[in-house]
Image 1 (cartoon, rainbow, N blue to C red):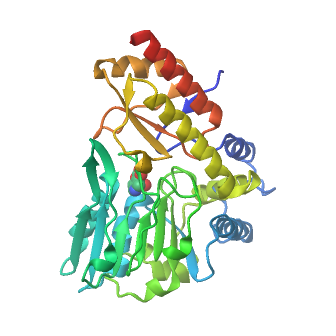
Image 2 (cartoon, protein in one colour; image 1 turned 90 degrees about the horizontal axis):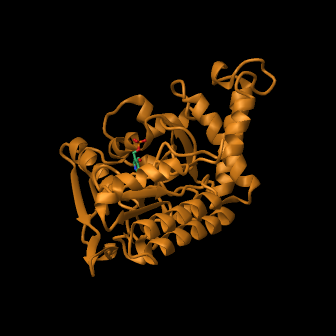
Length: 363
Ligand SMILES: Cc1ncc(COP(=O)(O)O)c(C=O)c1O
């Protein structure tokens, strides 16, 4: 079979080496004679796996010792509610910065759950010369006492990424679902980081939470036990049966990332991949992208065909060429190529070649 490059935004492609290893040991993991899916999460072998996974993630992201790492259920959206329930209390106030579909969904969930507590929001995307541009507000000038400020540094649907560090007098909570481990970040700037696993980590359903110790002292609302950060810290993310197969695959992805030089190394490749694709879009009157250069996502490259009538043909021919899942999110339309860590440079080169040829043929 010739190479298939999968540009899906999530669940996304996983590293081939990881998938091959998982296939090889699917029925007999670690000499146990059974699958990793079939053993107790409390067995010493599985506990060893979880310890290795946490230690590798800590090393990769340089997570300081005063942060807990949780492996939870419920994907990204599960954390939208967990954050509110864990940190807002009855009387709290929080600020949500809105830069696209996912931060907007996090805000809607917070508003739904807040009760007597107060949720404020600010739109931080403006059109400058017709291009979506993020303007980070000076949070130090806001006279309010927020428990936290929530934002989404990479908007998967809109193709908008915020590379500038947010400076805040309140703890920062970041939804890193689609950018985690794609470039280096300073974890110590955040009160809490969360990410649904299905882009740069592993299968969907799992979410990773990295939470600073002092955040756990904030007053919480009553909530389900499995989404209670304090309880999950106490139980080593095993208050109930965790998603063990997803945890295993995440561990394998972390080991793979370490083996290829870690985040600093993959970040360079990611930059190169995104550059190649944006250059193709900018260099071709056939395509356009509506985001200012400084906020163009490295992980989710959105683009439109100037002649939208050709969208269907573009997708059909791309599929034939082995370039799959390029259709943009149903809300924004157009195309989207997700270039997560597992996407090799050759995949992007193949896409660029196809796009140039398609444009030449149909111009
Ligand atoms: C940035 C971001 N946040 C949250 C989510 C929601 O994740 P889930 O579908 O796992 O709940 C997604 C899903 O793609 C996402 O991209």
